[in-house]
Length: 147
Length: 84
Image 1: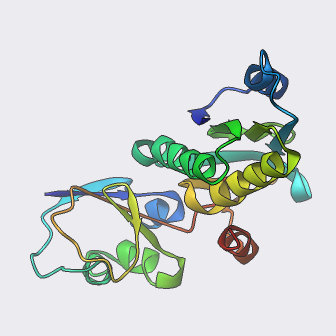
Image 2: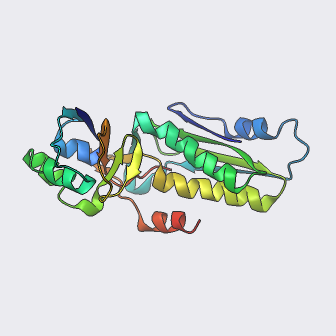
Image 3: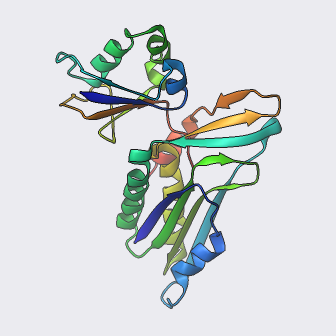
């Protein structure tokens, strides 16, 4: 089971990982990835717009796909939306498995697919008042297509 | 009637986040819908000018330009996604 959540609030990555592994003695590997707002060139804020009717269902579909590919792997995906500041966490992917290869692969798969299949759009604000929509990167499509 | 939803810079260029329209019966594909929408206003035309930068979801499922339209309830039009 890999669960997915959508929320404006911050998350506690350590607590989410502990919730996966507490009480389990069959797990040999736990991976946690946190995506952060990077303050490129004076960026002051990043707002994540999303498609409310579709976003959570799409996150859950991506999580279900990962669970089918790595059936021994459990995990949690949390994606935030709304206005975030440099250094804030945007997204958490945490996975656990009896074997590290599955935990790593599932986490990377989840991130690659989130980047290209979840309906979010990043809007950047700069110190001089200008704003800009982030352009999708071809390298993200390539990363998603290798799975 | 079909609800059209717009996101990100598509929403800004069209000037609204949604509109409810009666789609002409001859709009049988996503590509034909985009061609028709582009005639509705200069903002629609500008937002939809470069189809390589437009993505579409019909009833919350991503679709391609060739996808047939079969009595959609909700169509969302937006740029390539940039989450994660």
